[in-house]
Length: 217
Image (cartoon, rainbow, N blue to C red; front, side, top):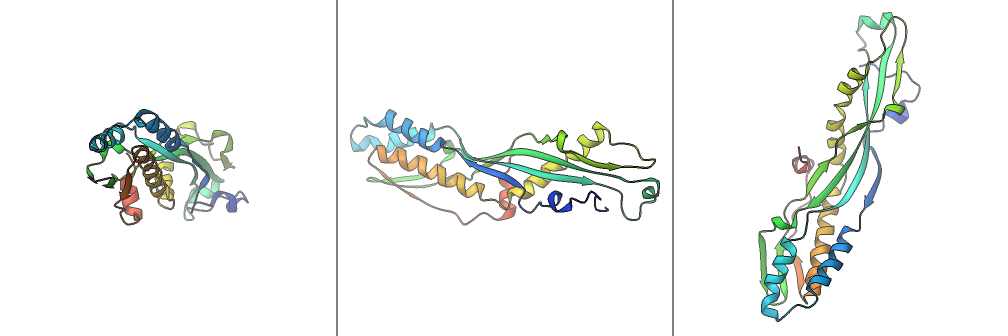
């Protein structure tokens, strides 16, 4: 496909890390305080293991990390297309989506308690891409000669390619690792309120292929 001749390629082709900002939420802090308030009056040590299991398993899924991604979908005539002799027809469509990552603590199955020390393995994080949105006011097109303008239906069809680009961009981020870190802090805070210490069995860093597998379809 030919490059879009708008004289602004530098701005529309930056896709290696198409992230506007990362916002770390304080969900884990509020959950820790809630756990401490509910479990602060813990009884004898023999009941602490069950209390910890109950507290962790009843904690909602923590979507504690999110990012706002913006990618650009381009369409234009191929170099060999004869249509270019009738005028230009090219477009750049900005597509935005919020991406969330979290750990479902109710999915913990590997937990052992020895005295006041807990050993556990977190379930894999989940990554969710909220419905993508077309930035209609930021669309740039170049249509001239005898060519037809892009219809809304064409734009929407082209924009559907944006999800694949966003998924690819997610593989360059550390959302999964950040989600695990926040889950660890949440569990550690709850355990600390019960006078216990947690040792996490950590997995190797996720590969790009594994991160794609974590994205909810």
